[in-house]
Amino acid sequence: MKIAMIHGQSHKGSTYHVGRLLAGKLGGEIKEFFLPRDFGEFCIGCTACFMKSEKNCPHYEKLKPLTKAIEEADVIILTSPVYVFHATGPMKAWLDHYGYQWMVHRPRPSMFQKQAVCIATAAGAGTKSTCKDMADSLFFWGVPKIYKCGVAVHAVSFDEVTKKKRREIEQKTGKIAAEIKRHEGNVKPGLKTKIFFSVMGMLQKKGGFNPADRKYWQRMGWTGKARPWKQKAVRHRAVGKGIKYG
Ligand SMILES: Cc1cc2nc3c(=O)[nH]c(=O)nc-3n(C[C@H](O)[C@H](O)[C@H](O)COP(=O)(O)O)c2cc1C
Image 1 (tube, helix red, strand yellow):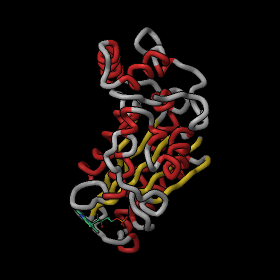
Image 2 (image 1 turned 180 degrees about the vertical axis):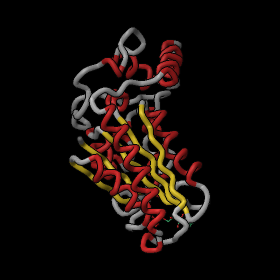
Image 3 (image 1 turned 60 degrees about the horizontal axis):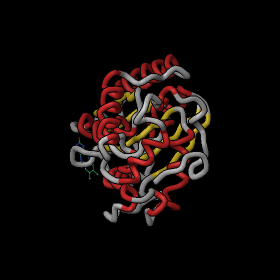
Image 4 (image 1 turned 180 degrees about the horizontal axis):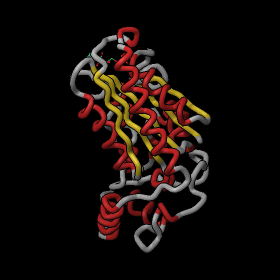
């Protein structure tokens, strides 16, 4: 199992430890990135990714290793401590760079066959909204199975986390790991994703939001009967090689 972990923080605190615990239970090959250490750019709002190609993004090259890791992964794990009830700025800034691959634009076919986990820890409250911040992008990328793991650790460092709380973390991550293993190799989108995708297809048939998106949907055959979750061998294609965008 290939795992891509993107941490919305550069330090190894409670959130990191919950993420690693889950990844350890899953086993397999882990590729891990810390934000902003490994990618700290802000979207400049040029809209070149939407209107032309994501390759025209001024941060395309810097983003490439992370894009490649999520593209190749079976499981994507996004982690973020709760900062004022939401995901960290670096996590948001990173997610902004993938607006072009939302279903409304040019979703990557491989996303429709993946599982993902959103992990958030808080001193007290805010894990729900923080997990949602990350889950929103995953859903609109087309990821069919998204698990949420929010933990109110009642601490500001992992050393302070009580034994009782650690047992709770063990249980939560254990349950999610079991679900992921159960679905391994057999991930299918639910009705919500299918309906949303069909509506997007109708919009593209009517012209879409821009020519780049429209051409992409036509080339993929998605304005006809083809569907990304039925396409075989779309996974693990190297970024920039297999699929042409824009
Ligand atoms: C800038 C900042 C904002 C925070 N906002 C919240 C908050 O809204 N709610 C909360 O319960 N904890 C909040 N916290 C506490 C952290 O979310 C909590 O300690 C978390 O477990 C830290 O994870 P870490 O050890 O991975 O850094 C905040 C901490 C910081 C530094």
